[in-house]
Amino acid sequence: DVTKIQVKHPNLEVVHGHMLNKDEVSKHVKNHNMVIGVHEPLPIYPYEHVKAVRSVVEGARKAEVTRLIVMAHPIFRPIENTLEFYESWKMMFKAQQEALKFFQNQVGLDWLYVHSPRLEPSTQSGKLLMGDYLPLSTPEGETRLPLNNYASALFDEAEKSIQPRWKEPVLHI
Picture 1: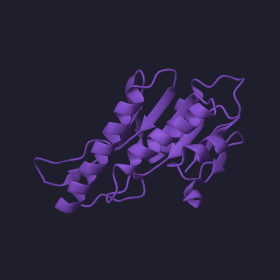
Picture 2: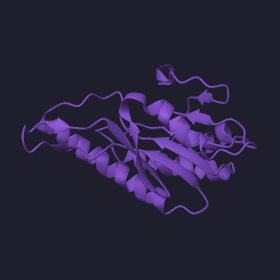
Picture 3: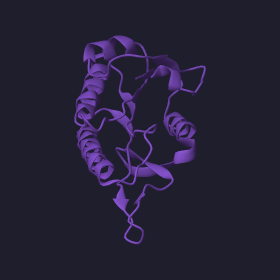
């Protein structure tokens, strides 16, 4: 939902579109230097996320955009301490790991992928513990974004390698 995007930046254009349609992605990102895609995996269709990531990569490549950021963590979904939640989380996490492998096999693409941490029940309390960070994977490895300030930290990471000749990024959700 575009209305949930609170980040404002003079070089950011927020566009609502369908990430599963590579032609629509390509149309929106043409003449931009970066794509920031937000796709939260759903527990009922977790592998749709992998399709969305593939479509964004294909659409960006078609538009000759080689800088891509995908936010995949279901940030607006609270953690519940139930077996049903844990089972659905595991499926979403597996889909995210498959999307991460897809990114890792890309050549000529500069990417950042924010995904969910592995969520396991505590051996002491049995409760599901997430921690206070989100994993940020890149071609060089993995780092962590603080959960309480992930959007700003993500933009900081993105700006580290932006070259002055690039135009503003497009946030495609």
